[in-house]
Structures are given as structure tokens and as C-alpha cells.
Length: 356
Image (cartoon, rainbow, N blue to C red; front, top):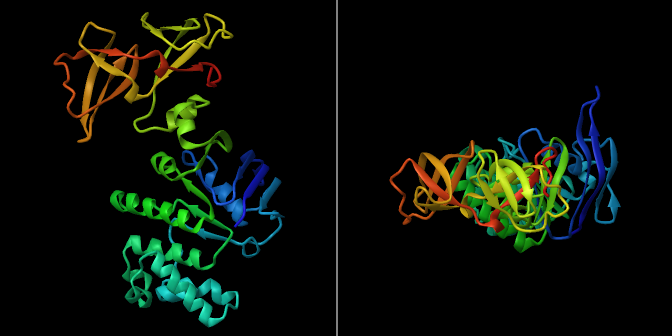
């Protein structure tokens, strides 16, 4: 096993387009790092650079104690699981899993042992080993692709959106299996996804990317509870954070654009009064009140989720969502009251989007 270190890694294509702008982070030995961000943010490009499938323009990538910038993928001691599984359709499951080991001239007895061990870990029935990929379900194909990676016993696993082709129920199941597998094998893992729920539940460490730059790096709950930018605040969380525009009137008060005021925690004394801000509030941290109490919110839609409800509407000229429990009674009015605790308010600079 090994850690993975990226130091000021950049990728510029011919013609001048820069896809990755000086990304740096360290994935500790045995850690599970998730690269997350919207489509086109550069996360798959970054993963392919670590794998050696894309050249890097500048910077340094280390796997363990080796700089791997100039090494071929086969020399990096990594194993990659792709979105489309990349299985050989004419080969059996067994031969797909054994293929890489045969290329490395691994003794036959050891190949059989490693394939059997991987099949047992992934709960692939012995009968499946003789089948072709077309005879398998999507979940079984994904397990075979993972098995092909496991038998290599690499220093690093790389996953490129491996669950995006699966249905919602199977995606949840496979997510649990991947996390359980990584904890059992303790192999350093870097995983790419655009699904922020997947990212939050899998990662020890999140790297949030936006337009080829890192927005924030840290533990999932740290990023959720203290997002460094408006982008991170809006990207992590389902439903996303609510944003209300206003002006900082004092270190503990924001005057919203509709004239109402909300309290915020002390700690903004260095920020001048009159600064334009965006107040962020998680849906689960806002609370319903009877009409006429608190802030007035016009209700537009109520989503029933079974485990709770989402109340959507307008507050201070902006979209607002409030998450409530399944047993909480809704007022019958179109306009309801909302209260927001001071410790639930995240303040961001309206100009640069940075946390205040």
C-alpha cells in the first residue's frame, strides 16, 4: 500500500485550454478519497493523470516513494475500475479477472488462488466464473470489474464513476459493498463521482473540484458543516443549502433584501457593516412557525418523502426549502412563518463567494 501525493498538478491541452489548474493534495496510505464536482470540472481528467492515461503538463504525482510522472500505467502499481466496466465480451468471467495476472506471467496456481479469493470477497458464485459478461446483470459486471482490480493487489485503487450505469437501488447496495471492501483490504482508494450523496457516504476525504480548481479539501462532515465557498455550500447537501441575499448590519445581524433581519453568530467583527453577504441555511436547520410569526415564506410545493417532507417556497425573494418530519403538521395557510437559529446561518461574501 502507499499514499498518493499531488503537488501543483496542471493539465493544459494543445490550443491553450487548461483543464487542471495547479491541484495539490495528499491521500494517506489506506485512505478513501473522493473527487467530486459537476460534469466538466476535471475530476476524471485528474484521475486519468494519476493512472498514467493522461500526461501531466507540470507538477508532480507520487505513489508511495516514487514520482510516477513519466511511468507507464502498468508500472504505477494501480488498478482502475471504469464506468463502463471495460470487460472483454469474448472472455469468461474467470478469464477477465485473470487476464492482467497472465500478462504479468503470474504462476497458474497463484492466479487460481487470487481469482477464487476475489470471487469469495465479492460473493461471485463459482457458476458465474464460466459465464460471459453479456450473461451477467449490471451489478454482477461491476463486481467482476472490481474483482479484476482486486486480484492485482495494487497499491492504489482508482474508480471512475463506477456506479453511474446502475439503477438507484443497486447503486446504494454497491456503494455499501465498495466501502466495506475498501475497509477490509485497506487499499488506498481514489474515487470519482458527480453524485454528492455518494461522495459524502463513501469518503474519508473529499476533494471538491470546480472548473479544474480545488474549492475545498477535508472530511465530508467538515465540508458539509463549514463550507469554505458558496459553491461547496450549494453543491454538498440534498436538498442543497438555501441562499438569502442581504447586508451585514452588525457582527450579529443580517438585513435581508426584503427588509427583514436574521441573527447570526458573533465572529464577523472584522467585516465592515454594509458588506453585501449571502446567508446560507440548510433545509433541516430552518423551522416552521404559524403564519405571522418569524419570517414570512410563501409555500409553493410540498414533497412527501415518507421519512419526511420538503416544503418549497419563496422567502425574501429567493427560493427556500425547509425539511420537516413526517409527523409535523403543516399550517393550512399559503404563507407560513419560518425561524432560523443564529448558529444555523453561514455567511459568505456576495462578491467573491468566500466564507466570512
